[in-house]
Length: 235
Image (cartoon, rainbow, N blue to C red; front, side, top):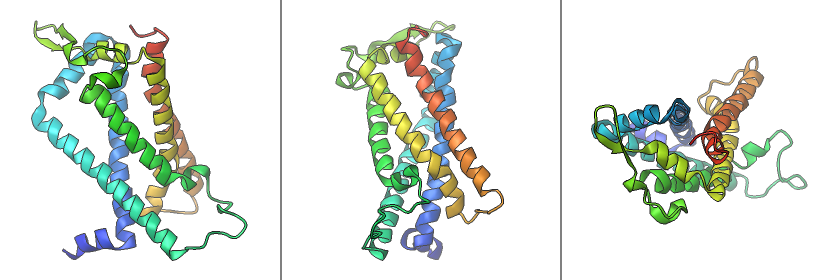
């Protein structure tokens, strides 16, 4: 009980909570990206992968609730820590609103995190809940079906992606949203190690560069799908 109490009420506990939930969400982001990239293997590969996920609801729904819990705890701990930092130093730097060593990504962590949360909600409405007005195409994504190799009617996720990303406004929004996510990660990944007490002067610069490289790869991987569809490279 004391461990749980410290986790939610102490500053160090909130840092651990934010770091651990951030690590979990990063892992999900990588797996989700790899799943999305199967669109380049052809319709059958992507639809087979999507059908596997959708047909195993005993795994899918606990995973979804777990992700929502991690998102909520990550945002809560970030907001709480930000409020505590402001309370500890109510007056900002006199002539320098941001410390010289602080990067833009680190100074905008809370703001970018909240915008990313809004983007995730849109993404869920777009492709998971499939709210028709959100996709800007006038098509009902629930009506898209195709027969698999066994003759079963399954949801045509490949066609849904192709139709959904034919709207330049939607693609632009996705690029901006993913860009902010990766800006958030470019600092958050290295900050995670610092919060867990794993910072070391010898390899800290390399860790920071690795975090930026990972964020860049994630950005390129995520925007590859909407950009390829918009350019008619995926049909």
